Structures are given as structure tokens and as C-alpha cells.
Image (cartoon, rainbow, N blue to C red; front, top):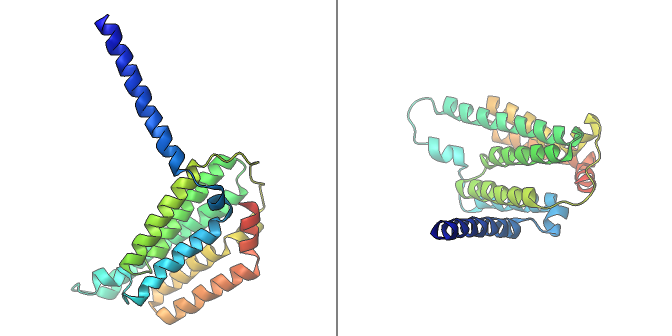
Length: 212
């Protein structure tokens, strides 16, 4: 009798823990607004991150290496080379997600790519901006991954169209390659602005919104 009560109590505790996990997952799921306005929410996080330049003029990389001894330029290039790799991986994963057949795998690939993109982009912002962007995107993407999407799976598209949607990531990857070599802020700003302009002209925001 005691053994039966113990097993019953243990089962009830496990069910209780599972119920708590599902309850937390339910509260963490993205709302329909978050699903429909993914690009807008991402852009707001980016804006908030880079507005921190108003209170801190040093990006996170320069903040931690400016007092170091030795060849600071070489160290700076090495760190930004890592950021460049993150941009490249993000551009590939996000672009690949649009041409992938299996919807669930495509969404996971896109979420991984967007997080890597947030880390790479955050490396160009001050420390506070880095934390805002990376933490904000991590929470946003986690909520999206838990969302129970009952809509039809996304339509598979050609690479050309997928590149149009992710043109800004591809452009920023090229920008980071040039910046890592030259370490010239003005050139990087011009190339980054051009990347955003090309993305808009190619209809990337509209295509991404329609196919999300």
C-alpha cells in the first residue's frame, strides 16, 4: 500500500512538473503580432542597440582592446574577422531557409541564422547595445520557435528570390570583409548604407513580410 502511494505520488509530481513546463512554454510563445511583424520588431531592436552610441562612443570590441599592449590593430582585425564569419554563416543559413522544402527545418535554420546575425551585428554596437540586441533577439527567436504555427508551410522559392530577401545580410557580410581588411569606419558606413538601400530596392522587406 505504501509502495503504491509512493509511486502514485511520484507520478503526480512528474505530471505537475510537466504541467509547469508546458505552462511556461505557453506563456513564452510568440503572439500573432510578433509572428506577423518579425522584421519590424527586429529593426526596433537594432535601432535601440545602436542608439546606445548616444551615451557610449566605443563599440564593444574597442571597449575591451583599447588598453591592451601590443598590436591592437591585429587584435581588432582578428575579432572582426570572427564577426565576419558570423555574418557569412547568418547570410547562408537565412537564405538557405527560404529554398528548403521542409518547413520546420527551414524555420530552425532561419532562427539560428538570425541569432548569429544578431551577435555579429551586436559586435559593432557599444556594450549596452550588444546586450540589448543579442538578448532581445534571443528572446524574440525563442518565442517564435515555441509558437504553434498552424498556417500552411512556406512556399519553396528559387535562390535568386531568396537572395533578394536576405540581400541586407549578404551586403553586410561583404561590408565586414572590407572593414576587417581596411578598418575604415567611413567606408564601412557607406557600404552598410548601400546594402540597406539595395535590399529595399530589390523589395526584400516586402518579399520577406509576404513569405514569413
